[in-house]
Image 1 (tube, helix red, strand yellow):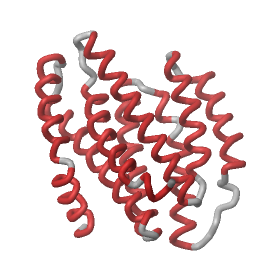
Image 2 (cartoon, rainbow, N blue to C red):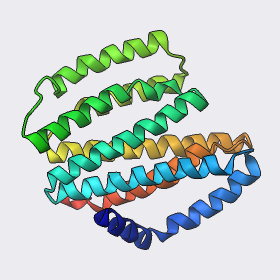
Image 3 (tube, rainbow, N blue to C red):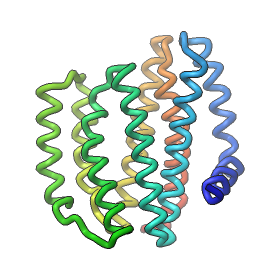
Length: 225
């Protein structure tokens, strides 16, 4: 808890501009969206904590604190799951929820490997590829989707296939791509819904926070080139 609070303090000091952006965004959302204040703040808090754990996770992994890293990974993915469940129940965004199966298996592999020194070899890049193909087929056949959801599904398949890797450089680069994609998709949703004068505040929170994480990952880039 002390380490987390220190990271939170450091984050707030180094990224104060995020809170300025969020304040402006809050005004825009208030003007363009009929929303519930408690709901939007709770969801923002969940996103904020998730992104904090993502940054602390990478920091611990870079400094070879693998047990701490794997614990942060589990917490971050559990928060991530809760957010996508919300999207599924209230916004009917089914394209996200099915891939949580693969994300969950990925953190189980990491947590077991770094805490119990046991490599679950049946969870590897080779096994995840056909597994994700099966998930993709199930998604196409049984879930409602739009054209952009197909691209997201392909991207989720590739990312989760390589997240089971225990090689530092591979994990960093794929996380960098993952965060960049989240930032891009969120920004795209913000632009589209803003033009329709019906701003998607969930996408807005995602963009502001994942953008910050993306910048954080870029600061570590020189260590992985």
